Each structure stands twice: as C-alpha cells, then as structure tokens.
Image (cartoon, rainbow, N blue to C red):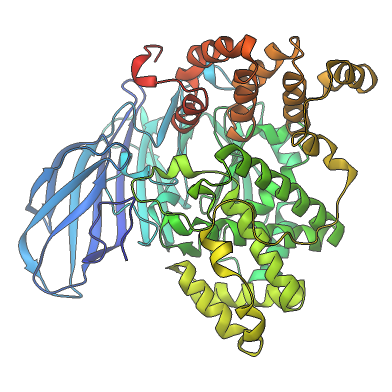
Length: 579
C-alpha cells in the first residue's frame, strides 16, 4: 500500500508522537519551529527515513541527541521536497527513536495564511490560520504527511502577548515566554492519535464564550457575541451524534469562526472546528455545517481514509451521519430535503468536471494528481448516495445506522481503505450477501459520472433555483420580474444570494455582474467564490473583467482558493505579477 501524495517512508517506520515548539513571527510571516518525532521502526536494521516537507528551511537534524545527516531532494510540483535522514545508528523492529528537526517555514507556506490587521474584523492586530488538509501540513511541520499515519501531539506556541493561540488540541496552560517577556507561550496536548492533516493553529486577537459544558466559541471581538447565539445548539447536536455513533472521545468541542478568506464551510480539526463567517449572515446551512463537522469526530477523525483516493470514506459517511443527526433533531423530511439538495450539487460537480472525468469516480486514482485539484462534492454526495442506496436495500435507516456505528467501533483510531470498508460491510450483513452481490460495485466505485442508481429522494419546490441551473438560461425579462417581485438583490443569505446572482449573470443581466464579483471577493468560501467567478467568466462580454478582478484580489485569497479559481479562469499564475 502506497500513498501517491506522500514521499514519507511509512511502510518502514511510523510516527507515534510529535512534540512541537513553534515561534510565530508576524514581522517576517514565518514560524520558527522545532519538532521531535517519536518514530517506531517497522523493520530490522532500520537506519534511514524520509519525511515530507514543502518550502521549509531545514536548519539541523538529530536522532536521540546525536547529529544526523540529511538531504533535501529536488522539489516536486505539489508534493514538496523529500527530507531524507540518515540515522547515526541502526534500530531493530519495534524500537523507537526521537528525531528532532529544527526548521523555519516560508512566508508562502501553503498551509498558512497570514492576514494583515486590515484583513481582520478588529483592524488592529495581524492574524494567522492554518489549513493542512489535504497535504499541506508538510509546509508547516516536517512529518509523515499521510492520513495513513496517526500520532498524538504536544505543542508550545510563542506569540505576541496581545494575541491568543489556539490549536486542534486541549488547552494545557500558558506562561510568559522566558526568553522574551513581550510574548506568551500557549501549551496544548492532543492525547488521541490523529493524522497530520488535522494539526491546526490560529493566532489572533481572539475571545471566547462558553456555549455548552464542553464547548466554547472563539472569534474576534465584535463577532464572538453573534457567534455565541448562532451556535447555541452545539451540545444538543453532540449528544445526538453520541446516541447515533458512540462516545465523543476528544474531550473539548470548540468552534472557531475565521475571517472571510477561509476557503471552506468548515474544517473538522479535533477539539476546534473551524467555521466560515458566512454562517453568521442568516445562512440556513449553519446547522448542517456544524452537524457535518461534529460528525467528522467519528467518521474522518476517529476512522480515517488511508489515502486521499479513499476520501469518500471520510466524507460520504460524514454526510450520512450529518443527515441522520438532522433526522433526529428535525424530521425524516428534513433529511430528504438535504439529500435532494446534495444530489443537485453532485450533478453540478459532474457537469463542471465532465461526465467522463476520472476525478468523478468515487475512488479516483490520484497518481500524479494534486489532491486540491480533485476536491469537489463527488466524495461527499456520491458517497452519501451509495450509503443511502445501501440503506434502501438493507432495511432502512435504523438498520444501516447500526452498521455505520459498528464500522466506527471496529476501525476506531485507525486508517482504512474502501476494500476494508466493503469487506466489513459483507461481514456485518452476512445474512444479506445475496443483496450486496447484486450491487454494481464497479459502476459505483470506479466509473466516472453520476451513480448507476438514483435513490428515491422526496423532491421539493424549494430547489427551484438549483433545478434552473440544469436548463437553458431564463429570459432576462423573467429574471428582472423575479427581482421586482421578491427583491432578491437584498437577500444576504449566502446560499440564496450566490444562486440568485449566478442565475442573473447566466441570463446576461449586466447589472448583476459587479454584485457577483463583489460576493466572490468579499468572502473566500470556495462553494460560493468559484461558481460566481466561473459564471462571470462564461459571460463573454465580462470575461476579461472576471480575470482582472481575480488578479486584483488574488493576494488576499487563500492559497487553495486562488489556485483553483486561476484554473477555472484559465489564468497562468506563473505569468502574472499581481502577487
């Protein structure tokens, strides 16, 4: 078993623990770091290992306190640079060694976004946040950057005293930095083994409010009080998820509301879910985004895809569990409503990629493919559709949720492949193997395009806008009439506003173009930003304007967002100088 997105030698050794010391430097936009990796040999006469890095300056390497030789191989376009370390001694299978690497990140580290005070809510202090999924942790920490490797971690983080640091771990105290009394060291511990992509850090002028017995919400002043009200149902969601999936093992469940450039709806960092601020604008998707990130505490964080080719195991199961939470807290009709919306999202992704694109496979090959380029709703919604189809075949939601809970218990604290999942499915439903054998597994798993079977979801008139995107553009007169009757331009709900503006641009209403571009740039959630830019780009008269606005705003965008929008707009960023 190999990981096409990693150079690390995880068939020969595994990391068991990381001890991180990080010094956050806002003057230079770098982190000066030291990491001690506790590594276990998986073979005899073990004397060399490879770690993943990307744009790191490696200062020194030692093993059990002795200097170790190291070499940085040539840089790969998206996998980064292998750090090859030769130990000054051999290990036998099962023995541990502590490998210490002193290093510095690059100002352009792909995992890190450095914001100026002007880009924050408070306008007074700088801000740093990380986003390591899928393969960006290596630009922040030299590590075995593969989801097949799970380890605990401890961290101490030195930051300016006016700022607060939080991480994807339990807070473990703070003290004045003994080397600089203008700084504070924050300490963190993560006793549950987890993959490197879930290491996360945020540094900013943060405040928090208690929202439950094991939860706080974090954000900047001026945002945190609104967030406190919006996330008041968090504990009920956690309890509902525990009833469905088993005990919550991570201790704390906090939510951090990020600045607008955060590229995703949420990110399931253990103990500290990241959330987009678009959720605070009356966005009705708030409950399912938080339910989704809570569900990841079991499917994704506790049971993890072994490589990114099996990403659907994380996301398909999480969408399934998210919608089961919604079913328990709302109704079965609510679940059907969300499922039908997800099917429309899947149709749109398949349309965008192309129905014959292998990246629309449920289990794609990522050999020589950047995982960021493969990101779409396919693993989420094609994965959910398969699980819902199996639910229909095998006895309904209670019966199939029993399997999901058992699957989580069986593979907790480990990483799995689609084959592992399928074998367990056949074992669990051993009395229904004849039904499972009739499923067209090849069509579901390894064939591009829409699934071979459409589940029987209940439809709703509320998907009117979404359905319109799969028909010819509306006449401009119709769209103007909709604005006259419903005043949709005044709607600030992100989900509705993005759909409405796309509909307007598609119908060639020129007045909507600046509104669409404004929404595409004033927040950075890819769910909204990419389709809005694409829509304007496809309006021939405004194609150049879409490119101009993108280039003018690219420096403020997250690395992943900027890279994918550039591909959408066919911009060769190597030939532009706006950054």
